[in-house]
Length: 313
Ligand code: ATP
Image (tube, rainbow, N blue to C red; front, side):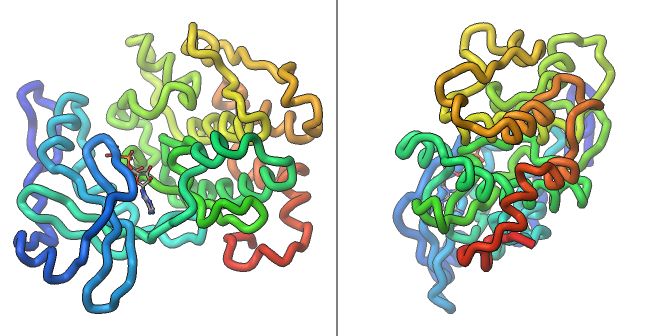
């Protein structure tokens, strides 16, 4: 750890664990076509030469990443995302096989998830039927429960970060990805870095950063709010807030169920959305309470053949 020009502590940039040479990479990994791109990274198909197994290889441009982190004054080191993913093991979280780095790039070999992301699925096929929504949402909640038990907050829950194993809504398994913003649940300054995606921001994330006098940090409750927004979208395929005046709508908790898509949805599902999208973090439902909500309990105890390996208890 060292101090930058403002005196803020930053992690040493040259964390050179798992450093390999540029020639080592093609000898050990057959990296081919692109699967997707991120802000500072591209994700490509990677086959481990020795075992012939396929992975999604996330290749991060270290320089771009560090420039962004520096601007944001963040203490998150480049290796944090990889370390975090490597330490996690849950059927609804994308696992990390290994990671290594060259001078210029960081390579993270991730479990390959081939059904696209939840946003793409919603855009292509519209909203989920209630039973299908509950099945997928339960998997996402199980993943979040696993993180929260370990005092980890994802902080960037959104449909783009939920990958699916197939396009078939009856059998697909959801896997939580992208831990670039995940952080220990510390009530400290660095946990209040203003990041994430505006539509899924919890009200306290916005107020903390628009009101510089606010001292409070934010914790697991921000994930619960984002889960509420995700469930709203799953059931209606419309976002709860409009683009114009977005922050005010979020801070005031101004969203409605009077759009046509909600007319056939059960009152239990609406109640769960409301309990998660409650403006006051202290009154917001936590992940255990959500898992015990009647709407999710119903799916949990309905036996169906597609359950095995899907992450249900
Ligand atoms: P950054 O971390 O640079 O901000 P990002 O978070 O947007 O980028 P990711 O979400 O990790 O980047 O990945 C970008 C895209 O790559 C995803 O939208 C998806 O299409 C693809 N992708 C990521 N992980 C996997 C995976 N495990 N299996 C298959 N495709 C993946």
